Image 1 (cartoon, rainbow, N blue to C red):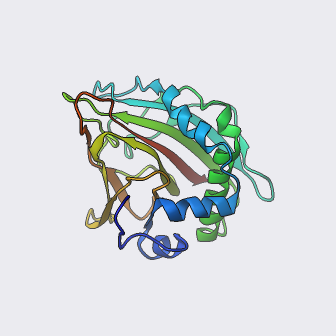
Image 2 (tube, helix red, strand yellow):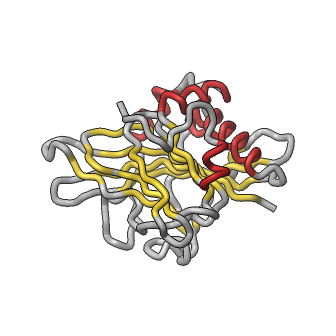
Length: 244
């Protein structure tokens, strides 16, 4: 189990996000918060879907350590979150100097992208982020399934672009699984790059919530504990950006 952290919250992540621009929420607490927001009835199948991701072929560093799927959603006032037509993921070079500046088309998230767990996660995010930004009621939402693989001869890079912002308003990083890996420590930095805190997502449902306008974030490389075995870090990344 992960060790208690001064960055963890016992009840709600709202206060630390408002005060310092981020929150680390331990898995037991995060699971309860999600259960309060909806159903996790298909969680086992949802987590298993990370075994069916596709290789990210856009890696400008030539790396073959990242697998992913992607989906787009929208939220409008007084309407449920709805999945949108599949489209590309785009980041400007200012935010992603390694892989930005082009449209990147990833394989879509499968039917579980419309299932109970994903719906619950998006509902929790919407409730949380609208509390933080009450004037914003319409959102462009993107979800990313990531698997970062680690090999004996090559570490896996959860954030190959380094310390960065995503160019959105809010970000959730939710740990799905962590198998046979060391490291993968998340660090949070102020806009002047001063370190604000660090933590490691170690248990399912461990989560980081970030105000992307206020802080940078990055994750250290992951390495296999047992070089003879498969080693990977699975996360769901959800981004919310105010929509016109």
